Image (cartoon, rainbow, N blue to C red; front, side, top):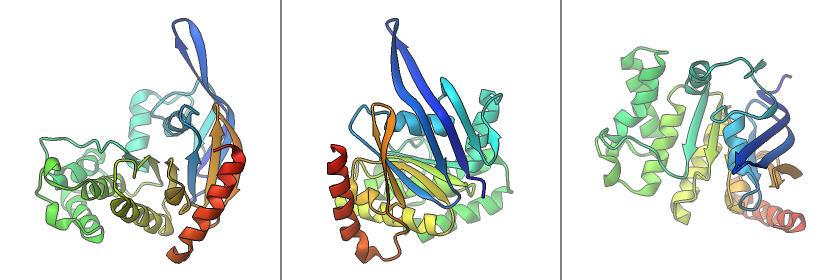
Length: 253
C-alpha cells in the first residue's frame, strides 16, 4: 500500500552569515495511513525542522516529499497552504490562538476558511469535538480564561475540524503539567485509533511511548528506529516507557 507520506533524500540547509548550516541530511522516511510516529533526539538535532519541512510549512533544500501520492514540487505557497488546511492538522507547544476570538470561534475558524461544509455543519462538528474532549463548558471563554490543558485540547479540536489525514504535533505537552499532558496524549491516541496518522516531536519518553514508532535524530540524520507497535492497553505504557528509555540511552540520549 502506498504510504501517506513518502520522503526521499530530504535535506534542509540554512545560510547564516555566508556559512551553510545543514540542519537535515539525506532523510528517507515514510508515514503510513493511521501510523503514529514520534521524532526524538537532542536539542538542535533538527526535529522541528523535519516536522515543518515534511508538513510543507518550510521548503526543503533538496529531496522529494510526496503526500497521498502527489509531490510538493511545483506547488506554490497558496496551493501548499490549501493542502495543509484541508488535509493536515497542527498542534504546537505554544498554543497559537486568536486573542480576540472565544475558544469555539478559534476552533471554527479553519473549518469556515476551508469551506468544505456549510457553517451549520462545521459548528455542529466543533461542538461535537468539544463535548468529546470534555471542554464544551469553555466554548464562550476567552483564551486567557482557561487552563493550559483545556487550551491544548481546544487546539486538538481545531486540528481535527477538517478531518485531516495527519496531525503534526510539535511538543504538544511541553508546556503542560503531568496530568494535563496525560490527558492530551490520551486524546491523541484515541484520534490515532480512529485512523488519523500522527507525526510528533517530543522530549518526553512517556509521551513518546504511546506512539507506534520512535525515530532518533542526531545532527539532522535518522540514526535509529524503535518499533513499539500499537498501544492497545494504557496499563502497558509504563513498561513501554522503560523499554524506550533503555533504547534511548543506547542511542546516547
